Amino acid sequence: MKAGSERLAELQKLSKKELLKSAKKFARRFRITDGKHFRLKDFDPSDDGGLGTEDKPVAKKALQLGVEALATMQDILYAQDKWSALLIFQAMDAAGKDGAIKHVMSGINPQGCQVSSFKSPSAEELDHDYMWRCIKQLPERGRIGIFNRSYYEEVLAVRVHEEFLHGQKLPERLITKDIWDQRFEDIRNFEKYLTRNGTLVCKFFLNVSAKEQKKRFLERIDNPDKNWKFSAADARERKLWKEYMKAYEDLIKNTATEDSPWYVVPADNKAFSRIVVASAIIHTLDSMGLEYPKLSKEKLDELGAVKRELLAEK
Image 1 (cartoon, one colour):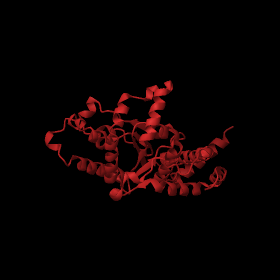
Image 2 (image 1 turned 180 degrees about the horizontal axis):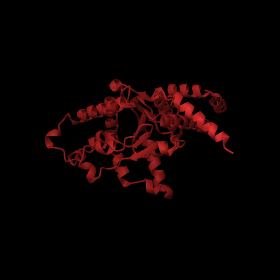
Image 3 (image 1 turned 45 degrees about the vertical axis):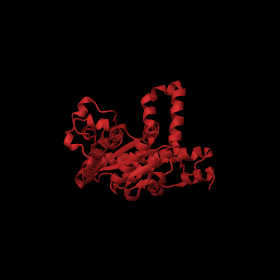
Image 4 (image 1 turned 120 degrees about the vertical axis):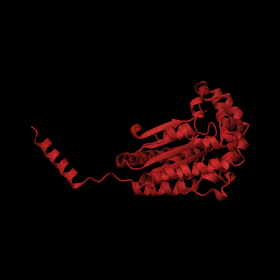
């Protein structure tokens, strides 16, 4: 394996085109487009791509390059004003969703990005279908929408806690043994609809281990500056780890498609997980064939005339 200094030197030599190609190739390792044979146990949460403690400069540089590439691509996305991207983050508590969003999107122009977080549904939200609150927050053309949790909670928390399902005021005859398969079908159709209308959906499962989650929980308890991040409810949900892992495996099996893939991101190493996320977003945006709008001859002539007027001013 190459030393950190060699890997850093190689990164610094990459051209923009080489960087895009490298990011796309790297992201494919974690990309699920057909869940038929998917098994969560085949994905190691502690995978760090060989990054050791001495490789911190490599990880920092790789993320920096990714952030810069995303900033450029988002600028073109905004100018082109045709496509939009929806990035969905799902994970167990303390897996690093907030940190990934903060660091990976740090170079993005806030005017072209919107973040929506979905917690327990309100009384108003429970008076609508489970998609309603998310549909209201879909990104406009030319923008990136980020969902910190999403409609996937319906086949995660609601599936693990079936009492939540009965609190949704659904007609009893609709709550059958087939309801989860029906939910998966709804989600696939919804994401297909979004894709057909120019919104590409890119989904991330930050795959943290139970051991690492325990470590992060204890850090939040021991550090007064992080106490606010911890809730006793988080520890209660941890006791249902097996149920949640089964629910995650089922939803990825049933909703991973070529157009709306899942990325199973190793999340025990935060630096590595952020590089994976950045690479996957680059892959998604690059697939749009982004380019700045081409001006008509009339518009170019108009710009030329305005330029001449400005230069003639005294």
